[in-house]
Amino acid sequence: MSDSFLDIRRVMLSNGVGVEQGQDEKLRRYVTLLLEWNRRVNLISRRDEENIWENHILHSLAPLFVTEIPPGACVLDLGTGGGLPGVPLGILRSDLKITLLDSIRKKILALEDIIRALGADNLRTLLGRAEEIAGSDVAGTFDIVLARGVGPLVDLIRWSKPLVRRGPASVGPRATGGKKREVVPPALVAWKGGDVEAEVRLATTKTKVQRIDVVDLVFAGSSGLGLEGKKLIVVPL
Image (cartoon, rainbow, N blue to C red; front, side, top):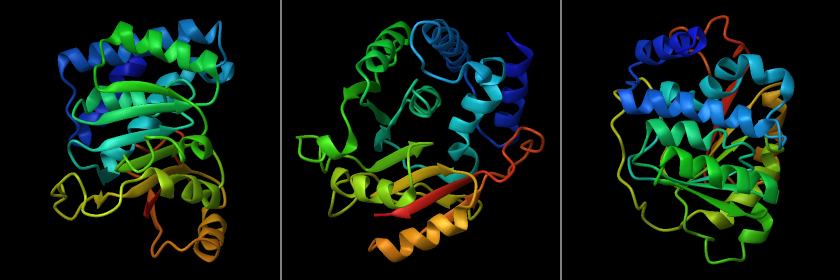
């Protein structure tokens, strides 16, 4: 078990995110498979391979520390690439039904192999672009759209709206105790860095969303892990 994994495990436990024996084995197995596939298909940057636990796994799991995603939610990981953030989240939250969407067939084939190896029944893949599947039978079937490092917030909101279900939420709320931002479907959750304020102002002007919440990725043990300035943008749709 790598020291990096032990560090990430300590951070998770410090934030009340339990890791069961089978889950930690799957997380480590996923990292091994991701690195193996990365030699053949460009799933993550090669310069990130040595810091994969901090730069990718912890970053993907960050919503569990600062937000509450309702149990049983149907989730779309838009532009998933190597399965980030969907696979790590799906490993720790097996109640979530997560669809991994990407427009590059080689990445989808790699993810299908990874999912089979992990035995992760709550994960599935979908080949295509968000704009394309908006006219397919999956449109209007998701509770939450996740987008990590995909595109401008204005575009993410525009792409996500046709994909989420309308009417009463299909999943119930999860008690937050006032400490975490509750994600109430339908919603978009986007990972952002840089000039977030400018993006939020532009999205507020250009879209018809009523509220955009910015959540700092600051939690117990986050100092020194490269998350400074990183945010989660939660947009009720």
